[in-house]
Image (tube, rainbow, N blue to C red; front, top):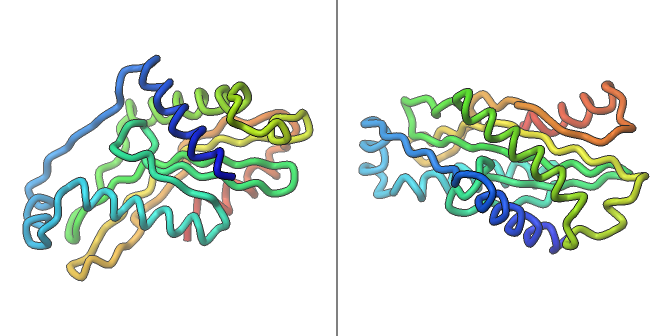
Length: 190
């Protein structure tokens, strides 16, 4: 599925062309102190948190990529094909150091993440990068969004902090019970 990384990059570029570029920067004195103590930048700490979430998703058999440089509302993108179901999770990751809580998503963050999910859903069905076998009428596509907070302790060991499901877009053909089963498997992350 090497096409998926190209699809992600293309979709992010088009999304940013059509929408306002999505970047949020927050400053927290406790985080700054943690970064100084561990000789890290906020970018490096964020990448470490995203890499941890990627590792958790790979353990659930997802192909996973980072949207480098916070170029979209979702930091981590994944894909998993099982039978006739394709699941694309889009995750916003917030990372911090010990003795602090990761930033929560604002109402605007939720809106942007769900707007991206709708856009990804449409692009998936239109993109020439996506193999035709994944776009036929028998396949059912789920694009879901979520949040994962990651806290690193003083030894730089990561811990997941209150991940949650945000919303989803999906094709017809999935009943609510099937959808909940698929999303529960993924959005627990543990």
